Length: 383
Image 1 (spheres, rainbow, N blue to C red):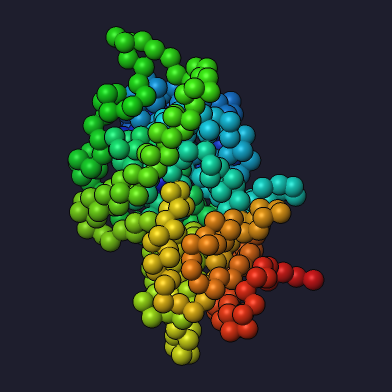
Image 2 (image 1 turned 180 degrees about the vertical axis):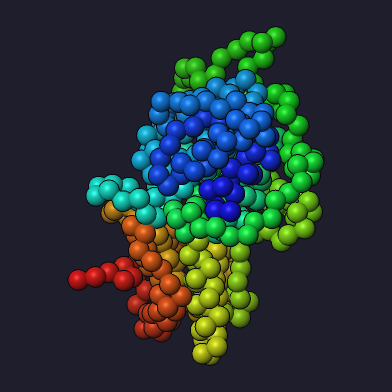
């Protein structure tokens, strides 16, 4: 199945009770498949056809406030359109889960892959994860509910799928038995949630707060994210038990133990970077890879430990913040403790091949040897 359909199967198997749906390329197949499940009676959830992405997130917040497990999916401009409500969900601690099929922002119009859209929401109080494959999309769809609803966290989770290279590419996906998923996830009881509008004990949420309390509210979310690393690791460990498959936690380390150059990536192109590391080792260059599966909370300590033996690190961003640079490189700078080279590549869906990553690794080694790692390289720039 495709990555989009893998997400839909994961949401079905997790028994989501409310799906708020609005179409946008290249995400539409997710909510279309969920509509099919509901229509055929394969899923008990309520399917709400809303008039916009903004309304989709508002519906999910309302569902969570009433104790229902909710899900939505979007992409690119749809994500930005719901951005106001994304902050309401995150800073209000509503454990919504959402799939984001990462897509370039306009102008000019593009429907191809880039990570700037999902990274634009990095301060909204959501756990942010990225999927490398359709199998990981299915696994993450289920794990996201467990992570979001964990009583130590109770925060929303969004997870990204690279447009087309994951969302529309079909591969073999192993599904779980429904009973195993039910045993893995918290029970569908409203009391499991920190924010719950109990009819027997009515209240409000999102009301006006003065300067005397706002810092404390924000600090409580900060403390929840301090616990998020353990929550995610526990969710991954328990998922390995029910699936019988190895899972990636916060990061994936690939051939890093003796690497002289380590690339840092996220998303689908990480597979091409792994191939490049293999090819380089055949040529006598000790290359490795760190893949970020989790971006929020940012696993700085885990990354720093993974690259501690390298001569040079190459961070490859499929995103850009004007006046700042590659977002991931900027966030990791100062924590790597090594010579770090910044690369921007694959914007607008431009293909990234193993040959590209071989070139990036060799360029990073060259820059490290010269002591010139301050320059940002736009890889593959034409003209």
